[in-house]
Length: 246
Ligand code: B12
Figure 1 (tube, rainbow, N blue to C red):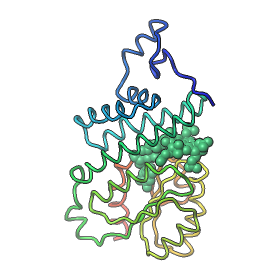
Figure 2: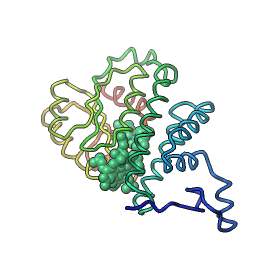
Figure 3: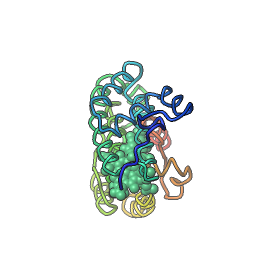
Figure 4: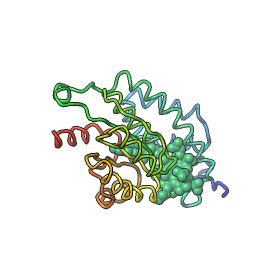
């Protein structure tokens, strides 16, 4: 598929064709600038945009307001045939590196360690994985938020259902966080939950990722115990789940 560059649309810089195009071009938001930098595979410019945003907000804010919207727009463009798979791939790689830099900083300063209420309850055995999918960035962000807040969390990387059930059983995991970005993988959580009910009935499953944002009821349909639409929600979800089981 050849990239159809979005000249004059405000998504890709090009010769203005009319008043609307001119208006859109001069109104470009930081997220749109990042989109342009990513589509042009300009890592340096993308990095500069994130640094500028970082001076005004936390790393998580930068991810939620800039990185995620830009990547989601790239996914939409690809779906409509307006950008190439190679552009998604390279954008993903660039964002992985930049997010790693942002999160390295976040580890040190941006999250509180668990408070007194957290210290009073025994820490649950936590693990995170991507199920049958190669979209790893979301998991990486959620894991960093957890670790930065002082939670020990096992990272099982990418797993299929059998592998994940075995890891959970062996490690006695109490709360399993599962990230999926492909719809078929999100639906496979149903199978995962059913298998876990047999071998590890007390394990709670928390899901997140794009399919659960597109369909707000999907997490219930696959039998999960909770859903998070962003990494920033994960600490509240844990507090709720551990409070419930205390
Ligand atoms: C980058 C990207 C890729 C990169 C991934 C690089 C990487 N290392 O992750 C690459 C190029 C590898 C890729 C490949 C493919 N991709 Co892709 N990809 C994307 C894209 C553009 C962005 C994903 C992303 O990184 N977002 C940024 C992160 C930060 O957001 P996030 O993952 O949603 O995570 C946040 C929240 O969801 C939440 N969260 C995530 N997980 C969890 C878990 C818990 C427990 C909690 C609480 C929260 C939480 O926290 C995060 C931070 O807030 C999406 C578009 C989209 N709408 O998401 C398509 C998209 C997911 N891809 C898609 C497709 C089709 C593919 C391919 C099949 C393409 C192909 N033909 O080969 C392959 C399949 C790979 C596979 N088998 O897994 C489709 C999926 C469609 C569907 N309905 O299933 C999408 C939606 C694009 C589209 N619009 O069509 N992709």
